[in-house]
Image 1: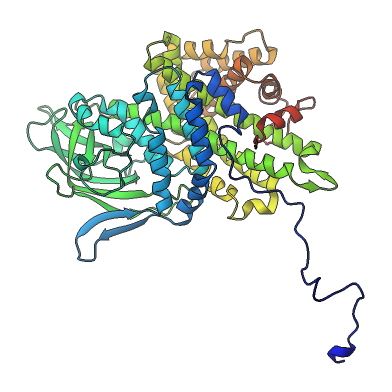
Image 2 (image 1 turned 180 degrees about the vertical axis):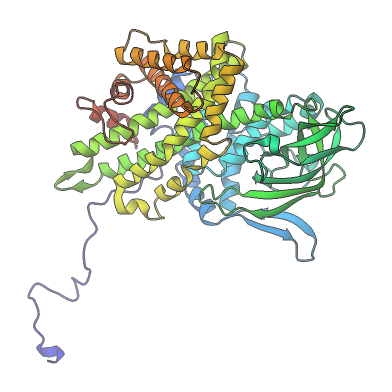
Length: 572
């Protein structure tokens, strides 16, 4: 049969109907939006905990993050950092090169005060406003958050050595970002990293083997040379790093773990003996160059007293752990926002996805989890403000000693499943790399491992309670603030009290206990200061025991529509 005699369907016109289909029933992408103005929960908790004096700047930064920095986040993760050990002439340079989008993100954050706000403006609400900034920034790119948080967190640790602090902190607090690989004294703005863990020890830093040898008399503020390695050194292009190493002190030459500030360049302008071995090929946190390094006589200054390395650097760790809370809460927020936006613009089985009861159950559950994580993160930020400004009560100070570990354990543990469930709400589009969900999903487990895994957080809680039993009283006091408002919560608090009294198997049960502590804390903050519908749903699902850990198991009677309306991104 030749072409002229082939049968044709009358309605088929080769010239006008060559396209196979028309694209419809697909929502618009959630992009080019203001991360602050579109988030009612973020505005509420920022305002409630006194950070709204910074609202104009937060709105401005939110618009930037939802616009050009949103695209920069994709680019910074698509084009990974590249390491060059030597230049073309054979000279050792230890250079890590980033895509311009990475520097764009870093410059915008530092100009906005992401790294310095509470230190530059010591007033109530500064930690809260800064947490809001981090919360938004981490939605665009969590990787650049690593050098930003380390720079921020280094300040209280460096203050243990006033002479060093006087020289370094003004440049750390600068709003100028300088990407150049040049000596610190030639820059107006500096970034700080941290390197603690070694191959054989991991979180057990007392298993470290790196040695520090005094150049002169030794002691606080004095010069040492370090020999050893670090298994994880994130952001190796920072200008200096807080590290741990052993010194030999006293007549018995007993090893003492001390804290040091190690610059990338020596004061004489020569390259310091810090050698990058490789950039780790990580599943997530890709824009951040985590590395392995060796010290072959690297110059460093002792920070704080000799032998007090852990107590000195723990000031930095406490702040980075807090940022892990905020960062994981941010991942949950953006995952839920994407799911809420997508289902609001798509139909299935004859009606809008977000109007179907089962999908409403899932979406509302995701929204509840996200806001509960944000609520206790902001509550912690408020306590940091009160402590820093001398307004905290004794029980608030004691509560804060375990709150960060409890919050980091629980929020970071919940993020991976939350992100996956959000991805499932979107469906096949959600696993395509053009969508932000795959990146969020790979990022979600990272904070649970960074700065001490889940077990380490639980053991830190038990250690604090054993060292100072009043910590238990302070925590019970905090989660009992709303006593009488909810019978279910009152019973839940009694169960926690019983858990504390059974000390024989407490370590074995530590995860169960810390989980209950986190849930009771979230319930109290929501009940006392949050949206009534969200608080009631949290109590019914998490405290009264009517649903499990899987999302979409809210009990009947929960106000899902109101919860979804509150959580859905408010677009102009």
